[in-house]
Length: 262
Image (cartoon, rainbow, N blue to C red; front, side, top):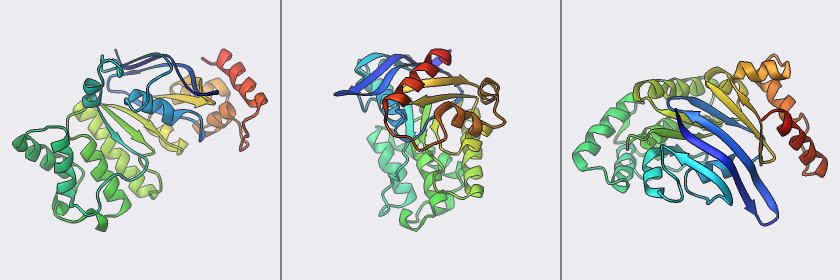
């Protein structure tokens, strides 16, 4: 059963087609990687899924709700960890969590129990009274993940969750995420530029380029489809090796790929 469903999803900004008739589904409990080069349409798609942008056309359902008709229900269905830091450095770890819980209307006693559970899970309970400005990058990421889970979301969106972190911290973060997915039966929808990371943790992958999905499947299926030895090689085969300019030739190449690799 798909907890996220996008059908012919399109977003135009004037003459620019940022997302062009994209269709995909994500199953409940799945770890789903949404990959693409910079400017491929990943962020625009995520913004439509999370009610920040209204689609030009197409249909979305998220946890059974339409983001346009039922935005509040959709927002309560997901948590999100943005690529850019979004914590308040002048608050403690506990205060950041507590403020987020107030915004979601979580009752005080329930909030206190949930905050303790999550901070212990990400191994930050003993730092709950410390100001976030003194935290390392990995600690901040762990706190952001805990905060995004405070209201018991069905889906967690992660936009480059390990960007700029060292390999040891990246592995630590993903161990938390995978444990959370299993323990809370949570769907994980993530983007990353670390292809080895996606190959290791994703159940399925969708590759978007120039606003269209050029391939979908498990990492092994994408490797078999392209004859590549790794997901990174498959990704480069699907999206090109060069730093590209927006030319008609590129658009035509991607449209041909779309016809073959929907």
